[in-house]
Length: 171
Image 1 (cartoon, rainbow, N blue to C red):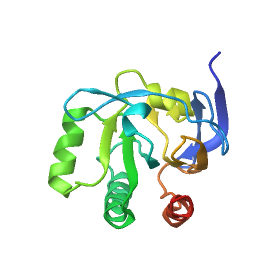
Image 2 (cartoon, rainbow, N blue to C red; image 1 turned 90 degrees about the vertical axis):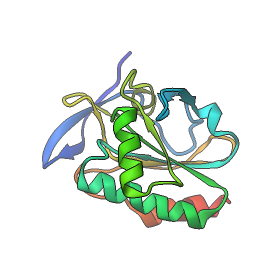
Image 3 (cartoon, one colour; image 1 turned 120 degrees about the vertical axis):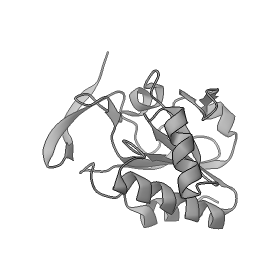
Image 4 (cartoon, helix red, strand yellow; image 1 turned 180 degrees about the horizontal axis):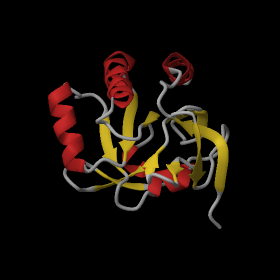
């Protein structure tokens, strides 16, 4: 059954409908299949048993998404053994161009454009736009959700400090 949630998130002040299975702190992370920049499938299993920060953005070609990805790329250099994944529905080719242009070399960018596998399994798909809503998920080494933020207004930034602190707590 397809879960739909309205009123949790807005886009430019207008309510949007999130579809997919909402995930909460304490849940076991659900697997997903997304694509790497070279069109290879990538799943949660491929991330191994590291602490993970999953940064979810609607499109890397927008100012807030760019800033979010750059911020987590900088943080990744300082965090050591924490893996940071950025997931959007941008095509892998566009993600690669973005990473080259912006010097993104620590964050792994992944595309959910094909199946919306991540978005549906974590409840981040905006039904009206077929984009992912903005958010952050922190998983421990056993893939248990330790932190999740569905950013209430898609055009605003997530709470970077809170997400990073939660990841550091479980190092």
